[in-house]
Length: 367
Image 1 (cartoon, rainbow, N blue to C red):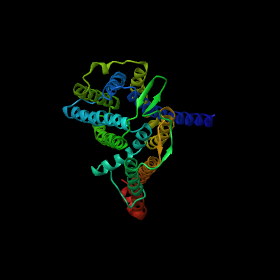
Image 2: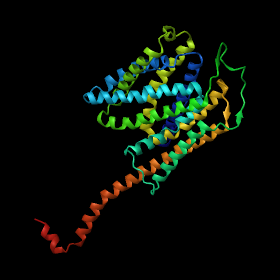
Image 3: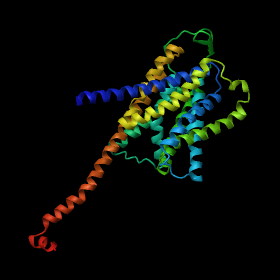
Image 4: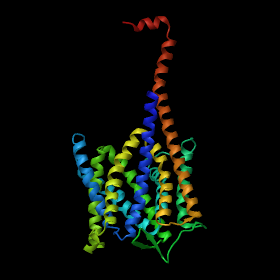
């Protein structure tokens, strides 16, 4: 009975991880569809963050009502900077990169985020590197592999592996909508590197902020709020045509609702649940599954072409991801061993001293 329950629990966890990756993959496809049908690159994140804020803020208010630390001006400034990196720059660069590149390689580039995060944290002294230890070398090699893979994707195209049907200079999407292929891969990859760097910077900055303000849902709500304000300021200069703010079709409404409800609402809850059940390393290990799903979807829906250089780059990034995670796992194991040794040393020392005393000295200690 217990075994059946254990298997059932594992299956639920694996299904949750696969569902999470399907949701992530769907966001890449849906976002590209939104750009192809003409949704503004500024309006799209504005509506997405409005929906996310409406979903997150009530939950944060009721669930963390007793646990929220008091707000200070310093914390508000840090929330604003988190929004600048994690919302405005992150989502802005992502949409620009996706516009010029493809969903497959937007997903592949995201696999480099753990390595870039490690590189930034090491440069700021938040992460310690012990190259001579078995945990330090994999992290360094994995970081180099990930950065190298991103460079290969950006600079090396390679021969075509998969030829898709195109009509003139357009790709047909659905029955009625055609979208011009304006894929400038170099610019797309540069924007996606900016997306990954801003995402990594957000995670590095978030760690010390969470120590001061551990109310995660409230912190996320404030980040969405300031990100929304920043996008509205950008929109005031960039998107002045009121027609672009109108939702003119069911497809546009679907893409916006998916981005807000699924990607910014359901995914946050599901990812938190998966991390709680299996830990962040195990959850991150499933991230390359997203790239495979996106590649299959993008080829079937958009007719994306696959080039050998981008496959090689994606493989290098995935190898780097696993190397960094393996190094982090070993680092945690070694850290736990050192703590255990530090706890047992005093006890062993006391026992040795006690054994070394003669009967007379032992009796002298007894009052």
